[in-house]
Image 1 (cartoon, one colour):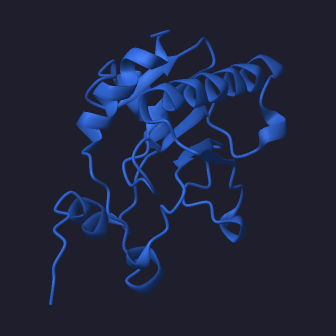
Image 2 (tube, helix red, strand yellow):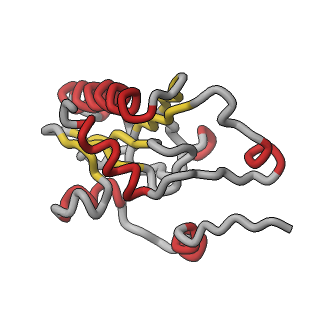
Length: 161
C-alpha cells in the first residue's frame, strides 16, 4: 500500500470539533500577515491562503466585518472584496498559469460553508486534468507545494508584480 504523508493535516483533524474563535477576525488583527498567510489588505477586506486548500493557490477573500449575511455588508466592503477577488485572479494567473478558476461563496451549512459565521469568497485555480484518480478514488488531494512556498510565490503578484 502506498502512503501519502500530509503531517500538516493533523492539526486540523485533532481540532476539527473543538470550539474556536473566528480566524478571519483574529488573524488580521494580530499584525503577523506573513505568518498567517495574509497576502493583501484593503480598508475593508483581505486575501488569505486557505490552510486546507483544494489546489495550490486556493485563497479566500473576506471582509474585516464579522457577518454571515452578505446583505449586511456595507457597499464599500463588498466592493473591496470583489476588487481583491479580481486582484487574486490576476496574481494567480501570473504565478501559476491556471486554465480556469472556481470562484464562489458558500453561505450556510447546506451550501457547504465550513465557516458559517464570516462570509468569504473562495478563489480556486484549476488546470485541465487536475481532478485525477486520487480525488475520485481515494478522496485525497495531492498538493505539490507547501503553504509557505505558495505564499512566497503569490505575494509579489498580489502587490502589482
